[in-house]
Amino acid sequence: KGLITVLGIGSLAIALAAQDTIANMIGGFVIMIDRPFRAGDWLRLPDGTTCKVHQIGVRSTKFLTFENTLIIVPNAELMKSTVHNITYPYPEIRVRIDVGVSYDSDMDLVKRVMLDEARKNPMILDEPEPVFRFLEFGDSSLNVSMFCRVPEVLDQYQAGSDLREQILNRFRKEGIEIPFPQRVVTIVKDKAPDRET
Image (cartoon, rainbow, N blue to C red; front, side):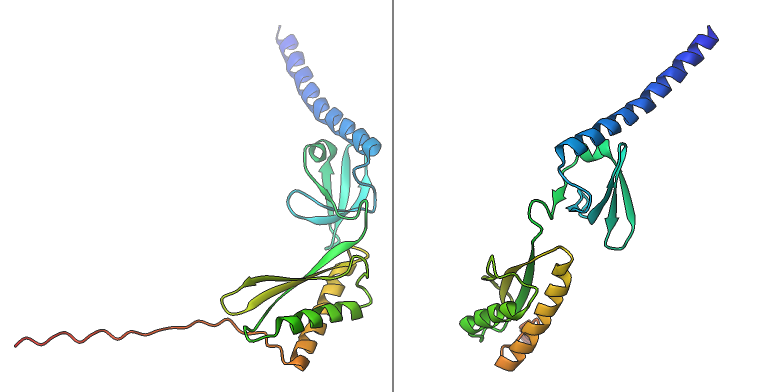
């Protein structure tokens, strides 16, 4: 009787382990057939990590991060998650440049300067054209943004850095101020107490 109990518990443990393996294998086959992503695609995982698909296996999928570390995710887990494919079907990706300018700034000039610098940058695509947006009236600045596209994911960081440097230099040349945060502090003196007569 004891042997039967042990065999039953062992069979249950094997069945549970096999269940995970089978689920991962099914997930792997679905990924290979449905092809929501392929080796070489850049994805954004549910935790926000941006990584490149390194290898799609039967039980798990391997991803390579910008830090050159390997992430291994079971296929069954991937099938239950929402992942963003950044490079498929189109490899182009958006670059966003945010900046705040002084309330004294000429907004037409700010717009013209930023779009002009984007067109000068060889990494920025002509189509779709760069777009300028006036975002909000900030506490210390008029906050604006520019959106443009680059051919590939890895281009966005260099292009963004170059554009910010270009815009800063051009703002200085054109006399457009990027203000420091400012606060107006009013000090109110306490009224002297009335003297007793």
